[in-house]
Amino acid sequence: MKWKEFNSIKDIPATLWSNIENGYPCLSYDFMGIVESIHPKDSFNYAILYKDDTIVGISFYYIFNALPSVLKKLPVGRILMTGTFETYGKHWWYDASLITECEFLESFWTLIKRHKVAAFIYRDYVSNECTTNQFYENYRFRHLIPYSSASIEIQKDCNNLNDFFSGMAKKHRNMYKKFIRQRESQNTTFRIEYDIKNNLGKLYQLYLNVHNHASEFKSPAIPTSFFTMLEERLKEDCFCIVMSKNEEDIGFVLMIQGHDIVIPFLMGINYNYRELHVWHNLTIECVKYTIESGRKYIDLGLTNYQLKKRLGAKETDIHMFGRLKNNFINRYCNSVIEKLL
Image (cartoon, rainbow, N blue to C red; front, side):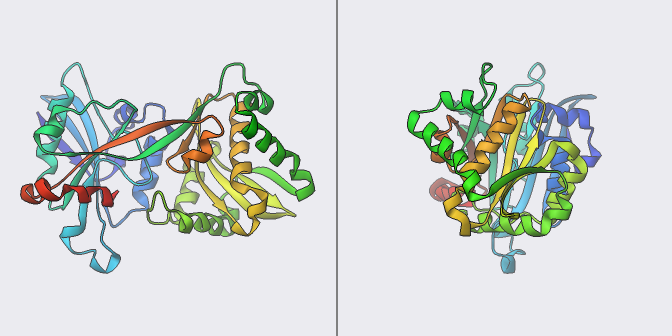
């Protein structure tokens, strides 16, 4: 078997990448192309595994420097991982009829271990039951569960928000109904905004407010080009739900949708209006949109699970496996891997 590598998703067939995407819009060919374009200084790598002339697998890996910008040129800070900070889920696929997972991971290891990096991270196994592959034990990878995702499944008999609320605990149901009743007296309104580009000046500052307040999951701020490219490439499958007070936009949620799933990808909030419960109101509008659009699932992402639990969200662990490149240091110091995620 042999690998063939490419440095852009544009150089590989979209039909091959669809095995990884598997209907999830934030792992789609277009979405990965957008993520790739906002990291021009990092290394995006797409590798196809062949057995003779037959494709038996594909994998993605991303190399970045975790050190502060003034130290970026030092190789000691370089990290290789099978994913990005803007995406989650497995970024690889193999034909299980032709190769086992262990064989695939072993072969991929021979490809990536040559890189001059400080650490390797295989991610993401999204499951509450994760069986460690023998490969990770053989090479002394550390098993990590740094995050979990939250999701809501809309039941078949749920036709509106009242139906949805009926499945919640009474105190949480009453809380959300109260927030909705208060909207008229608070002069708050909601709209669906497809014209992201012409509203980006005010929306982007709201996003930075939330980004700068983040504590559970820290990553570099997403540039404005990310928003405009989403609008251009995803068309009507990308839009914002915007919350306004007296015609001033005070919060929004960026929505990305697939055939049966809705993903509130990120939020922006003006924290001067905490009394208006912007997060809660925007989240319930996401639920309302999902129900009315006939979709089945809401992927609520990686943070604030306790808030999402009140809506009936289920938690799913995200498993990763990491090791330091140096065998001696990895044996005694691989606990530092968790600080890189």
